[in-house]
Image (cartoon, rainbow, N blue to C red; front, side):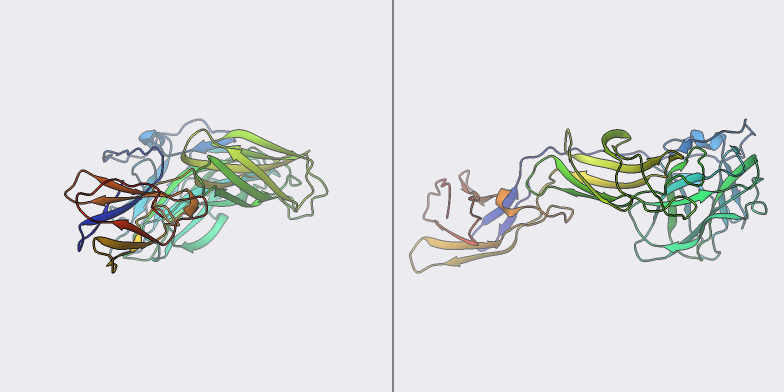
Length: 375
């Protein structure tokens, strides 16, 4: 509950909704980075979340510019920070991967930057050795980005011959920037070239009336991994937090698909989708969304004006239409309470089904007495 005081008449107005809130904190981490020992090659599918420091046992970290700043674990992710004088030149390299020549492997990684306007630069390469000189085949070309929420960056790995390969994430931002953070790196299973490309336009909209439902839409792919037109699809599968919630059977390539997901509680969820045909499963498209209702934002435009009737004032405010994170709220489901400072009595103002009036009148003649359904 958040209260805002109107100083002239010692009143306050707040907006509230019924919801559960929780808070968490994370302790800082301190690690010493060391070169890993060679392990047996891994055969995809392969994934790494970087949620704890165990990845250091199998990853290679190279500080190419030798400035002492390198990829390090940081609060459940791996991060490279800036140098005020030198450009980044730092590599995060996967364990050895056993790949088949002539096959295609989907690749995905989530990335965010330390500032929403300062550009950070990265590229993702693969090659036959865990050295910068060998990592010459692009998965994701050099890219400059600036966003403080995770976004998935995807590509494909197409080795010409079978063998052992490595994937390297190269932080190469200019000097005096901020940081690049990475989590959820995945390499899909080997697939033929006619495997579908990933679905697109995955959008999740939460309900604004407090219902624990999400309206989901996405587009079935039209091309295979080799860039050729798809003639048919077996299915498109939709997942929430890795669990299947909907299978769209034999959708037309390029068709718009929709689904209403009912979730168990207010929370942030990860939604993903893949397309399937006889050749295999596509790379996944992924997005995160909060489903449910957060605490309303602060009421604004609060006014207090005495009327011509002694002891009577008119209180006005602008109805709340967003939550504390800027997501839309349906004002029909927001309840307002008016408090008198220095008195245990409260004056409540509840929204009606037709919508709350912008101004509500109430008597201020002491002693204050609770009123309800103020119009």
